[in-house]
Image (cartoon, one colour):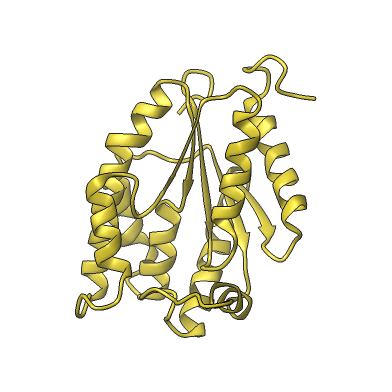
Length: 219
């Protein structure tokens, strides 16, 4: 996908509690303040059917969801998201920022559930018709730190968040393996870094991708 002929597609990835939503919002605000058209979205979700699937796959109380069914539900939500939301926005020149994308399925279902990266990746390549981000920002979080963050105060964990630490450890290593395999497409940052510092580093990388497309973007 050519950045010159489309918008810019950025995915935020990482374990639960890494701060993806916070940084996605910070980036969105920074780009909008520079006059760019920005769409911030999430997975699973982003469409009416995606939000319904999100509730089914993440909320407790829906009975047993086996690994393959789980993978298919995420892929179905992603197919709708890619076709109905992401592709049209990119075609209009919008910067699309998504909280999670294909890497999450490769990590959670491929590694965490033991389905294997290759099969899960193939399923999602088909679901999205090969739509990939221009940049994936990976916020690397230690599983114990992530759990402490997401259970602070009165917060409760969803069905995947409540899995044991060895599950989240497998996910962490899967994310890092994906980034190591394609370093030019990733920005890997420690989630423990101060929020403002992380936001500045992410914005700098995104500005380098946008280049001179937007007059006055660079300070």
